[in-house]
Image 1 (cartoon, rainbow, N blue to C red):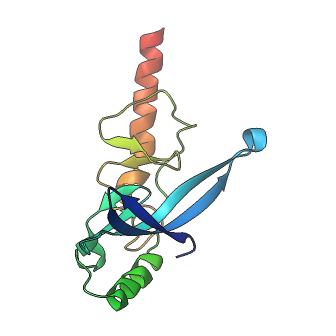
Image 2: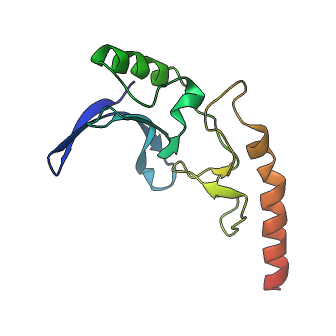
Length: 149
């Protein structure tokens, strides 16, 4: 993965976290935002957790065992996580800032995503559910505007 590894030592428990961090450049004001695209968390008991855009995913859904048995297996898991393509997500929060549909959330990249988005590509850059959010968010925005009148 393009990021780095971090040793977490909380209450004498040692975990290792491998993180792929991305810099998102924002045009307004020239500021940048960092977000974790992918992370592999190996706990002290060798339990493995995978995060995509800071959201815990089912490791079995990408072919990773919930426990590692060796450093070699962790290396293999890193290759799998590194090979994951993250879905683009739906429309930007900036396009629909004042709505709050129950079927969607805003990810760490400030993109709307459907609650059931798998986050990883299984073909295509955007899932069918996220692509349909444009209409849903537009309806919510129109209803909000009508109530404000």
